[in-house]
Structures are given as C-alpha cells and as structure tokens.
Length: 151
Image (tube, rainbow, N blue to C red; front, side, top):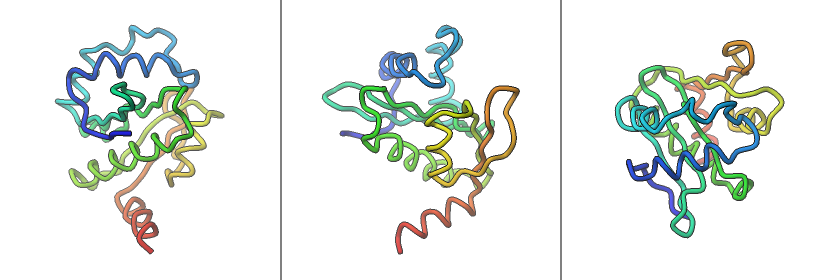
C-alpha cells in the first residue's frame, strides 16, 4: 500500500471509488463532478489517496474553507485493511497543522462510517441537514488522541 497526496490525474480513479461504495452512496453520481474534486483538493484543501498495485483504492479530502471533511472513502473490495484509518490520520494531521478550527463532517446514521468516526474519537454534534449525523473534532481532542498513541 502506498499513501500519498492526490494529484489531478487521480480524480477519475477517485470517482470510481466514490461511486463503488454501498453505504453513503450518491443518489445521483453526477452530483459530485470532476471539477468539484479538483476544487476541493487543490483550491479549498487537500486530498490523499491509497494506491495498491497501481490502483486507487481509497481517498480522503479535507476542506479548509468550510472546516469540513469533504470525503473519506475506501473501495468495498479493500475495506477492513486499515486504509481508512491511515487516510483519516494523514488528513487530520495535515488539517490541524493548517488551522486550529474545529472540523466537522456528516455521514448517514446507522452505517459503518458512523461507527468508524466514533471509534476515531469524533464527537456527535447533532444533525447535518435532515439525513446525516454531524460529528466534530476539535484541535484539543486531536492532540489528546495523538498523545495517547505515543504512550
């Protein structure tokens, strides 16, 4: 497995991963365009990918403008291999090097993603819209999580 910063040439494979997921699937894949990916990865924030055998199998994108995790997805054929956790940690480490602002995300309730974020230390913060659970992570919480890893 290779983890690295995303490049513009990764957008098409990222879209394949995003559209392959079975939970938090887009009702209309055209809602997230290649131009959206480009904007969020290179103008508003940064993205990372996990590559296996020269194929993108997971990705994460942080948005500094809205202090939001815009995406974190792993292809269903590659889940439960620790890919999401590594991408998550790369993304949040970078995010909190850029800003101390609390970051948030939304995910569908009752999903593996919701449980993942709870395990990673995210705090429930109500609802994002009417269909997504909202989670937040403060700089202080992230520091505490990192400190427990080094003990």
